Image 1 (tube, rainbow, N blue to C red):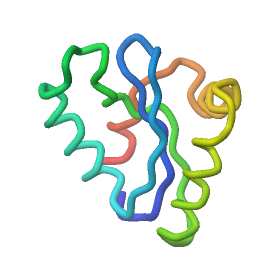
Image 2: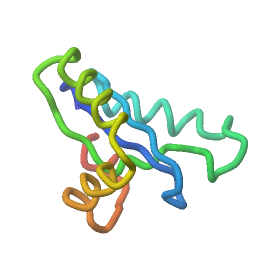
Image 3: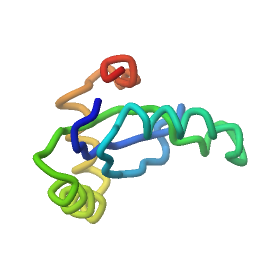
Length: 95
């Protein structure tokens, strides 16, 4: 997906989250999945795309990523539950 996007990734146990922004979400998630073996354990590998939103520019999605990242965990969980209540890996939706 070659659109500016803000996204949330998690690990298999949904115990850790990261918020990011990218101009090419499919390429970014692919790169993270490919390098996941370098994580100390599978639990730490944040490779499951559980939420994303497109934006108009990299600047706007970067600002949104910073805003979401500063929010409480419950805010992130609410975003995920609204878009992806089954917590599926959305990577296949974007390639």
